Length: 321
Ligand code: SF4
Ligand code: SF4
Image 1: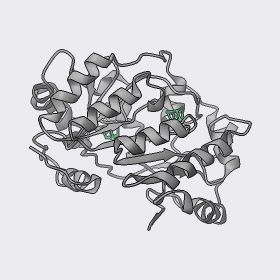
Image 2: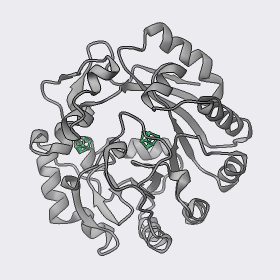
Image 3: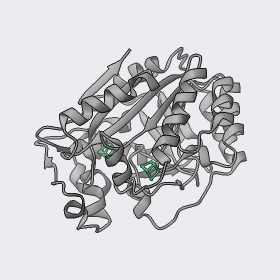
C-alpha cells in the first residue's frame, strides 16, 4: 500500500487525512508502546501517576504485529508512555523492523543510550530519533523530571556521541516549556544545544491538566509555580483518522496520547489490524472525536489540543538546519 522513502513522506501522507470524515486506508504510521515502564518519573507524565508499571510486549507478539504492519508499508514508531530502550528485546525488535524494510522512529530520554546502543542503532539504520527533554534549561529539566546528580551531563554526552557517528538518522531534540522559562532561557537553550542534533523543537507548553484533573494531583500548580492554560474556543482533533497506538498487551488505541481504556477499540493480538482499523468500534470513536465531542471522553477532555497559553502556544521555535 505505502512505499515511503523518508520520514517526511510519512507525515505528509498523514496530513492528508487531517479533516472530518476522511480516514486513511491504513495508518501511515503505527505507534508501538513496547513496555509500560521508564527509568524516570517526570512530574508531567501520565505513566508516573499510573499504578501498573513493568509490562513488556512479548517478542513473538511484537514480531507478528510487525509482519502484519509490513503488509501495508507503514512506518513504525517505538514511543508511548515508556522508555523504549529499556525493552528487553530492543535490539531484536529494531533489527526485525528494518529487515522488513520499514521506516523506524524511536523517542527516548537518551539516559541509557550508551555507546554500544548508539553504535547498534546507527548500524541497524534507524531512520529517526527524538530526544525528549523538559524545560528550557538544565535546572528546569531536573525539576520537571524530578532528577538530581549528573544525569543531564550523561544525556548530553550520549546524544553528542550519537550525532558524531550517525549517518542518515534524523536527530531531533524536543522540549516543552512553562511560564518559568523566559525567552532568554529558551534562546540560550537552543544555542547551547543546536550542535547536538539536526533540529531542536520547542513544541509548546508543558501540560499538567491531565495530572491535576485526571490523577487528582490538585497541588501540582502551586508546587511548581505555574498557572493553568486556558480552554480553546473550538478545538479539533483528527488524529484518529491516521494514527493507531498499540500497547504491550496488544490493545489498539485511537492515538499515542491514550492513557485510559476509553480510547481503546480492539486488540491486535486477537484480530487483524486492518479489521480493527476499519471496524465499527474505531469508526464510532472517530465520529465522536473528529465530530468535536472531546468533552465526552475524559482522555480527550484534558488533552493539550484543547488548551492554550497566552504566550506559550504550540510550536514556539523550530531550528531545522
Ligand atoms: S522520560 Fe518520558 S516516558 Fe519517562 S517518565 Fe518522563 S515523560 Fe514519561
Ligand atoms: S483529543 Fe487528544 S487524546 Fe483525544 S484523540 Fe485527539 S490527540 Fe488523542
